[in-house]
Length: 148
Image (cartoon, rainbow, N blue to C red; front, side, top):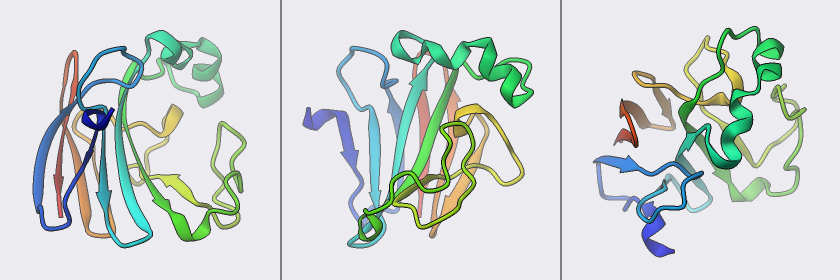
């Protein structure tokens, strides 16, 4: 519903918002869209390894990524660009983004960090085109602070 996705007004400079994981059948804000231009936006969503998200915990993923324990939670931050809506799968094997080709969307992750599912964990902060997203708190829900 319309209460599930918060669209941040262009003039709003700062917002702290608590998100309900997408995997939960619960009402409330599940994501934030931060418009950057007419065709470009940042999307922020909360995830949990429960329900259909349980695959995040499969040990196969851990071995593939050399991680001792894949994240059971996280926040995804990705940009979308409607001008390049032609090639949705360029450079993605489903596991690793090789960043080949022109893509319509990609995750924003902390530099130098490799994790399964391109998820942010508490304490992470990323910036894309002047918009900063900081993952400030986690528990049953995830809280992010957006500044631009």
